[in-house]
Length: 168
Image 1 (cartoon, helix red, strand yellow):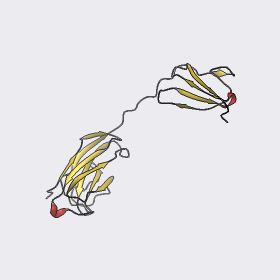
Image 2: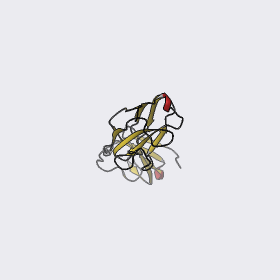
Image 3: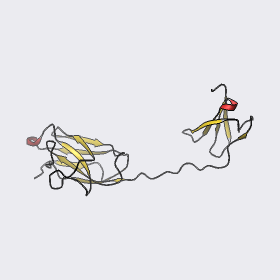
């Protein structure tokens, strides 16, 4: 009979958010090889307190009480069970805890409006554009090696800055 405790920080987390489990282990069961493992539910957890497949993630819990956190970025969305287990084995130290990893909502890129630049040498014109990036403000930076400059544009294509020089 499991006499310890295992408590999750949330019943549901978004993929990439950490989840933490606090645990207590009866003093007579404390061991350096005790561990908490995360298993897909219902696929392969040690429900019968025997090996039924490897954990998706695991962390050792060698103390009588404490907390262990897991990063969930590598976990596919779905349902999981966390088990507190004894001595690198599959005997329960506490009742398992169910939790869900939710998919991260997709955020569409900012809308692109209009065209950027024309062929030539004047402002907002390109000779040999070689690369671009978007900064934290959403400005689009274009490296134009043919004109030896870098130009910045707003999301709607308005020129806001020109850095000239030898960038080769």
